[in-house]
Image 1 (cartoon, helix red, strand yellow):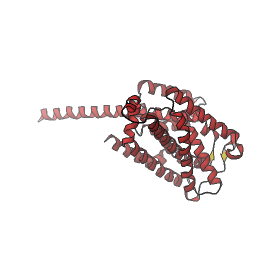
Image 2 (tube, helix red, strand yellow):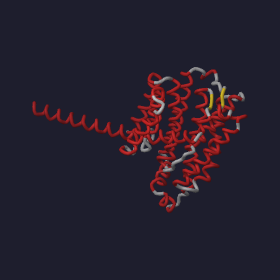
Image 3 (cartoon, one colour):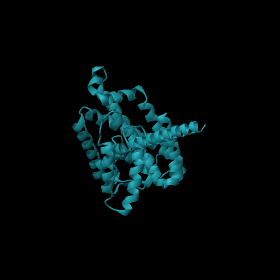
Image 4 (cartoon, one colour):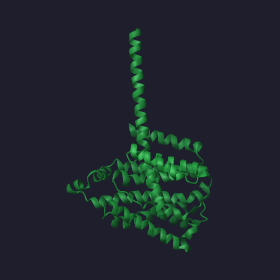
Length: 318
């Protein structure tokens, strides 16, 4: 029932979003929504914190952008870029999942910066510090509205696929590994193998989002492959809440709206965001989604209490 209401709210958001935000902003929210929800598969469901997601996001954006510049159709560029992220995730994940905790984090960080350095110095291909520019959207999604509709469809397909994963036996294995990896190993599960699967799922869908991102501003800024972008992804995921499937999307919407609004007013806006994040982490471990859920439960409790009191009054009057 809870998931039913969440998905109804999601559909409503997709319809009213363009009226609440500029088309470019709401489109960016959906793209990073794919990133955050897929990252939650690895972080929230499997218990793996990675500082390397920007690697897959940026690399896929570069691949997609280069293919479009080369004259390839979009419907070929997106799957090739996504497949590229999947292959890279298998290679990098193979080494990273051999370590746990801080060592896993450090390895993902190291690989991320390695790819960032390659993009920075390979100016003939990536544009270096200036980024990859001049990427044009196909004519059928040339307007902001048509591109939003296209992105919304891709977002929905990604969300459905990810939901099928977390509600499948594979999702239960991820949760078991998060709660007690030693026990999972003891009952016969190859923990490293399933961690690699979780890592690859998150990275592949992040790559899918990256292949779409290049179309927003017709370029790939080099900071999209920097480790700080990985930090932003973690921030959005945790802020929204890793305790629920769609929670990270709330974090994405809040973060992008806040940054777009307050960056114009005050250059040090991340300071305010940091304070808000600290409060949420300290008092609401499940993120903003947990806060909203608690408020909803409290509202329902008060409503039921009021109805009960009203029934008692009506009974006495009768």
